[in-house]
Structures are given as structure tokens and as C-alpha cells.
Length: 474
Image 1: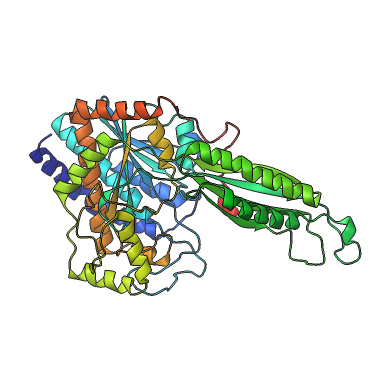
Image 2: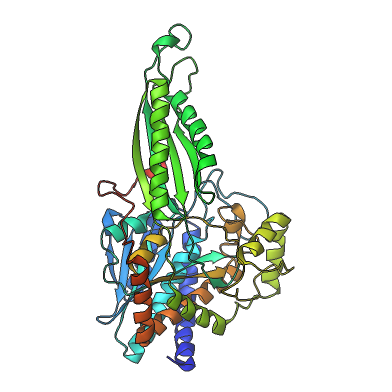
């Protein structure tokens, strides 16, 4: 692949970008949370069909998942898209103040409206280029719902949806232009359901056994455990069922959901068992019973040096998106709603000195002294079975915390669209490089094989754990 090929490829992406920008904006306007993305998935399906892709729906028993494919033979290049929103983040676009469209409504606070459309744009551009050049390959777009805690990709991996994929490529909205560091926390979400005995809280409290007391004692135990777990592990919770609203009734039932994270999959699984023992102890102290129900689980992410270098080269050649004065002016207004600490944290994460620029102006070097801000993603499970690489593209003002109204406010802005298109070009160029350079393809697969030789992939989801299609209902 030479520079002229890449320019032709990027021209194909420019030819299709307007439709995909419009798709992103439509999905922004219909925010749907974990496993409820019916309209968003339908929009993605319609666009894939318009672009000539063969479409299959309902992967791994998930109604809002889908895959589109173009090409008849050759290596399989997968672009991973998402389109789920977050609860409680409704926000008008294009204003730098908190103003919900709908009180308590949902919003695309992680930019997945852009993520899905950008990944599809990469797939469309690459497929059209390959068809014109007569290069055999199969290009796939995976529509992956419920990334925000639902672990859809982990269920899809377990079901074999990626078994014949050669390379997987994705991206995520961010403050900076960079190859995504291959760091994410393995994560299990588990519900602990306590059952006790109801009673009159004043007349016969001695006859009651409080499930809510058990939930509270479990919280105490987990807090003490924090002194004795790896410093980079994380445990947090939300009480989903307090047992009722009457304080004069001993609560006979209660449920708490824990998110348990660690840098390595096995460490996370060990931590889950420790938390379960604490729950059993709380049940013993309160003479209640407890059941642990796994809701979802994801693995940590494995890096792939050959693909990361190929992606970096493409991003370096592209340069940073060309933002204009209007883009920068709005980004400064958003930064006005942030603290200095918000902005400094983003620079610290990439190991670069703080500047006054409101939007990214450089490609982050690969070997800086990073202090990364690490979360969890179900892309991790894909990375254990397929060589995987990801782009960060600057869709938001530097310092914007994700999962906030500020991300939603920027989700339809021209700067976000420019970054989305840039991400699509970088992803498509990396896919083309893998197709046309057998050494790159072989090196990427060898790198994954070496990493998993001693620790083969084992799904963090037991066979009896089904996709939690109703998890958004609490």
C-alpha cells in the first residue's frame, strides 16, 4: 500500500461522510441505554443495507446486535461500532450550560452515537475502495449494543461471532488524537440478593431479619477489604432494592449491584469471590440468605504492537483534524464549565505538559510517561481472540470528563464530526495495511498468540449467564 492508495481510500470516506454524520446525529437524538437500542440499531441496519452490506441481526441472542458484511472472500476485517447511551444525561446540543432536553432523560455521554457511525464510515470507505481495486477481502461492521456495563461483545465472543475475524479495529471519542493505550480493567457486575423475614419493626423487631441490614453490613465489609486488595482494583456499588419505603416494616428483601474491577482477568475473578464471601458473612450476621447473580463481565484489553504501529503511522500521516475558530471558541466555552484539575488530569493521562489549546493540536507520542485514566470495555474480550487496535479521536474540548452532560452537548458539533471522520480514515487505512501487507497480518496474529500461549482466553461469563436484556430496568 502506497501513499496514493491511502489518499484514494480517504477520498472514498469523504464521499460517504455526510450520510454517516447524519446517522450519528439521528442516533444522538434517540438516546437508548443498555440493551434497549431498538431504534438506534434499526438506523444502523438501514444504513448498512443502503450501502449494500449483507446484514445479520440478533447475534448471541441479543436483539439489538447486528453485523453487516461486504466482500465474498479473503481476510476478514472487522470494525466495531457501538450506539448505547447513558441514563440521566439528557442535554441540549451546542450550549455550554447544563440544560436537559428531558428531565431525567438519557444522553450520549460517552459519544457512542459518533463511535458507531465512525466505525461504519471506515467499513463503508474500505469496502468501496477494495471493490473498485478488485482486492479480495471481507469487510464487516459489528453493531455492538450495551457497552456501558452490558458486556454485549463478551457475549458475542463467547457465542463465536468473531471466530473467523482476522483483524478488529475500533475507536472511541476522546480529548486527544492517539493510539488507544491497551489498558482496561477486567470487570464483573454482580447482584447480591438478600432475603430475610418481614416483621413489625416496633412491636416484634426480634422476629424480623433485615435484608437491608445485610446490604449495609456487606458495604462495611467491602470497605474494609479495600485495605487488602491491589491498589489498581476498583469496587463500587448501587442499591437497586432497599426493601420498601416503610421504616416500620423489617425489610424482607434487598438487592445491591457491585462492579468489581482489576487490571488482570484472574485478579478480578479472585476479587469477585472475596466480595461474595463478604456477602455470605453479612447474611450470616443477619440470619438472612444471599444469592450472587452475575449480570455481566468483561476481560482486560490485550495490546497488539504491530497493529498499534501501523495505526500510529496512519494517524501521523493524517495529522490532527483541522479545527477552525468556531470549533475552538465553543471548546473554550465548554472548558469554562470545567475545573483546572479536569484539564490537568487529561494531560497527565497522556504524559504531556498542559497547554492553553482548547482542542487537540498534536498526535500523542507512543512512549510518553502516562498516568492513564482506566475504565472497562467489552472490546477487551475481542482483543483476546482477535488482534485488536483502537483510535482515540478528539471529539471534545480538552479536559471534558466522559459520562457527563458536557460530552452530550458536544456530540453534534462540527468538531466532533471532523474527529469522527478522521478516526474513520485512520481505521480504514489500518485495515487496508493489514489486507495488503501479509507480514503485518502475520505479525499481529503472532503477537496475540504469544500473549495467550500461557493464559488462553477463558470467557469471564459462565455458560449459564445470559445477556441481561432487562438490566436497564434495575
